[in-house]
Amino acid sequence: MILTTERLTLSPFTEDDWPFFLALRQSQDVMRFMGTIASEEDIRTLFISRLNDRQARVIRDKNGQSVGDIGLSISSQNPQEADVGYAIAPFAQGKGFASEAVKALRDYAFTHTRVTALNAWVLAENQGSVRLLEKLGFTRTQVLEKGYTINGVDYDDWAYRLEKTR
Image 1 (cartoon, rainbow, N blue to C red):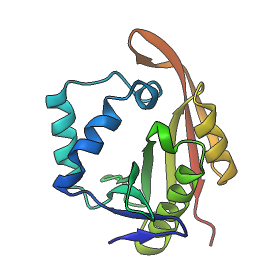
Image 2: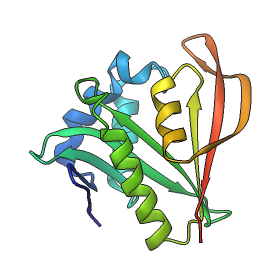
Image 3: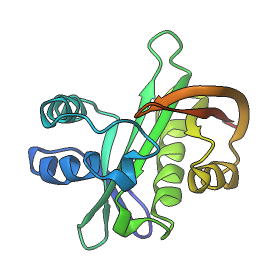
Image 4: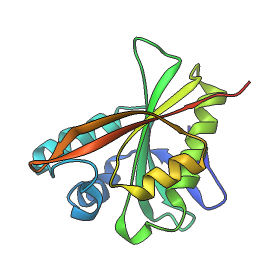
């Protein structure tokens, strides 16, 4: 299923998305809040999993240019809950694309799946994502002090949650 917004298209991954995905996952600016940059082989393995994931999407602007990716990971133990994650290319950051994409995925999850709650994890230092989640109504539910390590540095990890209103 392809999701569309005023400015974006969120579509399933295709093999043609590999160069963009690789560049995104090798970008220091993108990965500084996500994790250590993996080897190309490991990034390829992750990409193949995205190709086979019906809830993973590439975010494209109206000109068809890839600007990021987003995914919904529905819990196998509790299909009413899902984690949402996203990454936006540096050239596209600060333009509201992540917010627009998360809204579209939220609306899709709450209307086309059994999901009634979305969870998101964000490092405390990633104030752009913190503001985005809070603006969309997510509430911080947990703080894991020094709970996430990237390149030997410990960061506070914050859990956010948004529940479907009936």
